[in-house]
Structure formats: C-alpha cells, structure tokens
Image (tube, rainbow, N blue to C red; front, side):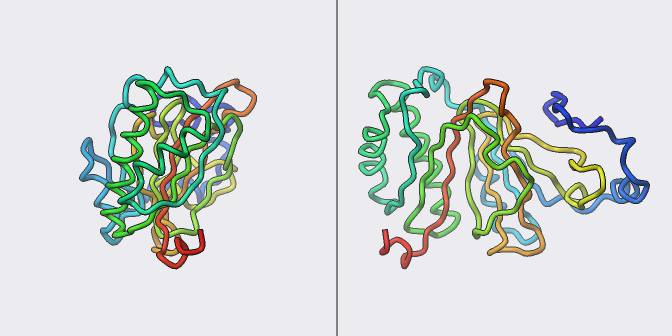
Length: 231
C-alpha cells in the first residue's frame, strides 16, 4: 500500500494495485524532485531557487512545548512589522490565553526565530502569523496555496503531508502515492502559485479527525506593505 516516509502506514490510503497502468508508468519515470531538505536553517533559502517548490529544515521540535495547555488557548492570527514582532506577539499570546512560563517563552522565541528567517528570505517587512490548535482535518485535500510562499511548522502532533515530483500527477487511485510527512519541529517553506505555476508545493493537513489527536501549528505568510496598512 501507500506508505508515508515516516514508516507509519496511513489509514484508508488504498493500495497501489488499484492503480491504472498509466499511473504506475508515470511513477517509474520520475520527475525531478522539487524538494530540498537539510538539517540546518540554510535549507530554507533554497526556496529562492527556480525549480524548488518545497524547502525543509529538518529539526527536532523545541523541547518543553508539551507543557502548553492547548485546551485553554484560542487561535492566533495577526499581522506585524517584523521589527516590532516580539512585543506584538507577547500581547497576542496574553490575549489568546497562553499562561506565562517556560513553555510559552520557548514558543515565543521560536516563532520570532522562524518569522525572522522567513522575512529575510522573502525580503518582507511585514508578516502574518497564525498559531492554530487543530483537532480536525483542517485542509484534508491536497492543495496548492494562493500565496508567494508560506512557512509551516508543527509544534505538537503530526506534521503536514506533501507530495513530490511525479507523485503530484493525479491518478485514478484517489490518494497519491509516496506521501511524504514532516515531523514535528520540521520547518518548511512551501512555494505558492503566485510565485510559480510550475513547481508550487502540494500539501495537506494530516487526516486526524476522529482520532483524538491534536496539533499545534504555526503558519507565517508574507504581507505586502499595502496590505499591512489595511490592518
């Protein structure tokens, strides 16, 4: 059957044998990978390279975040000047019900770090920050984003799933083969269709609905100065 590269089979993914011969053939003649992965933050800069649609910094999730009380927080979504992000984030986390303490400090500092990497790579003075507590299949269909690029990391729970190269070609099997899955802590830049029609990242939320699993995920989007003025 289809396997995720974490070694964990996915529920209800169907089996390769149900696939048409044409689909199997396209899987044998591999398209060039659009993913670049490395174990350091410089990996993220690869998103600026033509033909790269997914850049992943593989890392462990910051330790100590399991102390966060997810049941007592609300989702966060705001736009900020990158230079004023620390103070803004502090206020927003207060309003969202995040208790002050070590786990919150770790979360705060990591969001600042990732937003800073993103702003430098995207040459963006303003960023949109989304911190979401997910218990359902938020975006369960594989899709591309209508943005230039976005940063995604999962702090707690299963990471985002994505497909590469020829596996992105739709076939009759329903779900594509060779679904890749980010681990908690991994940081990805996903190129969107506003940047590239040819190599946008194709991804989805892992299907966790009904399992009792929870996720805490961060999304950072670029913001044009004109949009920032409207906020």
